Image 1 (cartoon, helix red, strand yellow):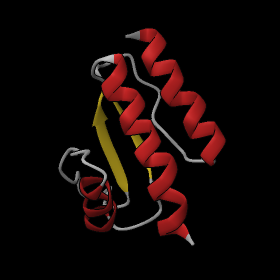
Image 2: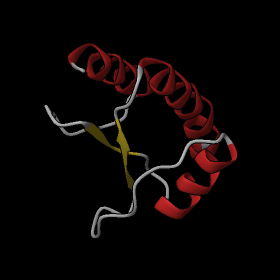
Image 3: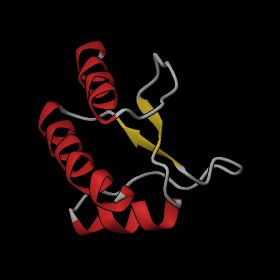
Image 4: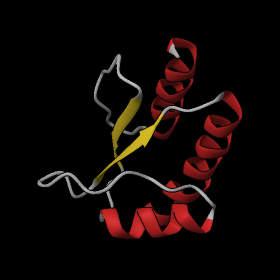
Length: 86
């Protein structure tokens, strides 16, 4: 899981997204857009994310799964996040 988490951290650096350091089975990062908009866009990419955690309504929680699942989720974040921030 540590290797998968590191790939997420690399993505956050690439996208210049703030994130919380974690050793848990999820990543938590700032999207900069309302949670509902990000969650809906991710769902269109077939990736479901965790619920909103007030007051962090512009942050998202994604569980770290299997390697293929993580790759698909990272690809969706890489596609969705820049489009929503534009």
